[in-house]
Length: 289
Ligand code: R5P
Image (cartoon, rainbow, N blue to C red; front, side):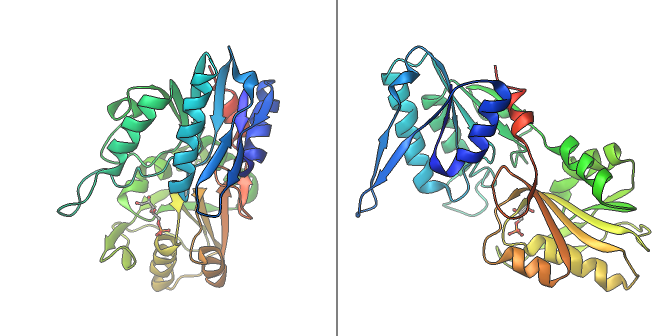
């Protein structure tokens, strides 16, 4: 059975359709003091349950998700698995400054406790290489690279793929290989959580090309804007700018800012919004166990 929340209904229903599984919904009542009352369909009894919830803006969602998972077990679900197309808190994977928490490890311990398995898409694993380095549950990490490459092949002429920082290499390199075009990865210098600067580290001919900047997450859009600025500095004529992110978090008017910089913004529907032009539901349903 696929279980969705109201905020994950669209994607959860599509996954259910593709995988020919029944769909049911977890109900949430929010009290005026901010607490949530969660109601689970009792049909979970004896079933292998997949709860779908994408975890941007995660704090309240996390508590509700754990309440739901616990109650599914109480109602004798056979297995309780999580589909978190966007997995939260993975960027804080080390103590960057004295006293900080290492959020990714705490999330892993919580999920190990409450879920039997988890599927996610392009998580921001940087210092860890694979899910089992962090989680003990049965996990599957999917990538949207092939879907992104297909989108580029169908919709963007004469592309060059640019990664805005060294961490984006894993996506950029694989997408460029699938598209069959050139790619390069910039260096990103982060002066603060809000001030960054991107620099080219190698010479690459971008004259007349469609500039496709690819990354896992577009959050405030600063990283993308930094990369666009860096390309514009070179002063050659390009066909256009395309910012492709797997996860469109798009906070603080990121979409508007990128449009003002004359960029087209394309993301998958791991987070559903106006830029979700690439559908991941089939990819997910093909990987359920
Ligand atoms: C971080 O390293 C990620 O890969 C993204 O580059 C980052 O999250 C994008 O954030 P923003 O849009 O706020 O610059």
